[in-house]
Image (tube, rainbow, N blue to C red; front, side, top):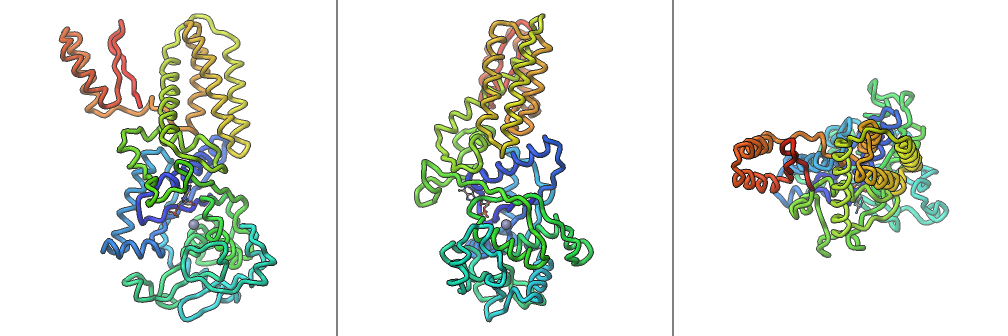
Length: 453
Ligand code: AMP
Ligand code: ZN
């Protein structure tokens, strides 16, 4: 599975993260269903934007992109995105890009001009098919050229695989067989996906070794031109199908509008965490609507997610305390029904809403049994088992996350203050723990704690 990764020229925003979360859910679900998944997610560390902004910040391209790569991984970890198997960097795959461009030159699909090497889209018959462009219109009207990495559908044109050095590029260039210059954005992903997933570069370079990728993903804005251009380059070079399945995540909107700095509705994860939100609530809100639908982010929805994630966590804690003697046959049936609906929905193009509804229905029924002290330990285990399966995909439960040594120390100190009947100190410590998201309750068997969001 190849997922287009971030352009490391800034902190990623919550729109990017929605797409990355969709990819995380997809991969987790495939793994849950028994598939072996190798996920490759690239880091775009050279393109028009990274060069432009590294110059603004007066940093070398490497120092500049390193800085945002480090920040990207912080966001990945705090949202519990499982790490990809490989995170290839574009700057470390120039050789493969050159070889693929040479392959296309030999086949006559690309041509040189004074400023770069371009793909001749009229020579690739299927150009436009992936993005559903009007093929007839294209053949009649196209033939401009575009040097920039990003361009709109209205400007369909021959695009650059290699850009000859220009003073604006400063010290960013590679001396290669293609000439002094740098790659276009699209050839980067063709080369990195080929290198890490297809076998094309296993023994130097061998087109016979190329195997089609199973799944290629990204946000919907990448469908054209980026993915269309990847298809043209890779299929043009190897003469085989590039990817079997393409999955694109729709955009995240904020308050119903496109996120943009000028509208003041542009958020990074750190902006949201700085307001005191727990990353698990952000994770939940971003994954709780279907990936092919536009999603409207609001703080009300995020507040709602805080409540839901807390309820899921509380539910699991309650299950662990179930103690009724008698098991009830209906619990097993309820769990089986929930599981069936959850699995069926996720199998159906990751239909998350009915899948979540199955979990909530079960939670409501079981909570009633818990309220009435009618859930046995055995029955609770069955429900817990299901909740743990669900969490392999949702990843919003906190039960197993270890406490920091500092929190362990505060809890121990409170326990001993209580046993020494120093209640003033015990209350102080309770307040201190609360500030760290830990709520302590006193029971007849001593203190008990839980995390709150
Ligand atoms: P970029 O760093 O711009 O290449 O984007 C990284 C990923 O985020 C790509 O898959 C984009 O399609 C995706 N993306 C960009 N903006 C949004 C958005 N507003 N909503 C969802 N995904 C987005
Ligand atoms: Zn890409």
